[in-house]
Length: 151
Image (cartoon, rainbow, N blue to C red; front, side, top):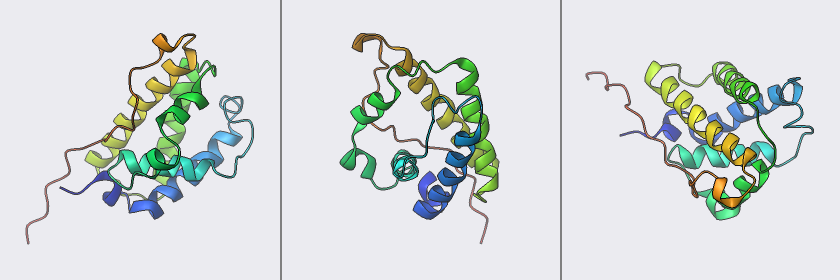
């Protein structure tokens, strides 16, 4: 089974996607308060997280750890509208990045986004540690890859 990471084109494909996405959120009026300024490491961190979640190297866990991710989302109070816009812009970036457009891959990416954005939203609204989402490690996302063509 091919990983989502490999199908996306590895680090190169995912970095291209995250750069396009990050540029979009920085310019978006609704998301600007969540992303008020360009941080030099943000695209790399996004790439590391997505790569690890899609079955690639575990750099995010080794270099930053999941507690880092919880910390950056705490107290952002992400609205439903912001969460929806985040997913919308990510899928726009996905289309613009030239990643494979097959429906099984596209659906897996969308499901990953929907899940992850809900975790981030819950953590952004948590007042106490008990209100945080129970996820404490980068999830490994899988998919039902398309059947291989006959040779």
